[in-house]
Image 1 (tube, rainbow, N blue to C red):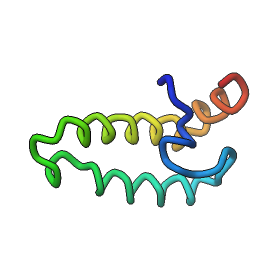
Image 2 (tube, rainbow, N blue to C red; image 1 turned 30 degrees about the vertical axis):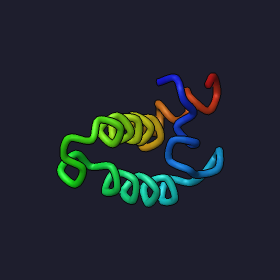
Image 3 (cartoon, rainbow, N blue to C red; image 1 turned 135 degrees about the vertical axis):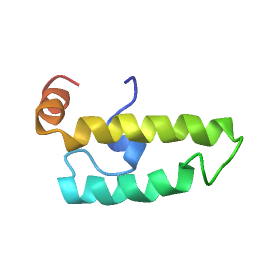
Length: 69
C-alpha cells in the first residue's frame, strides 16, 4: 500500500477501530462494483478502501503501520 490508510478512509491518524470501521463500511458501499458496474475508477477505489481496512482492522498490521509507516 502506497497511501496512508487513514487518509484513504478519511479518518484522522490514530482514529479508533470503530471510527475506521464506520468509514470503511460507508466507502465500501459507495464504491462497491455491484453498485458501480463498469466503473473502473470506483473499482480501483474499492480496492484501496479494502486494503486500508485490512491494515487498520488487524491490530498487528495497524501497530506496524503506526510504528513504521
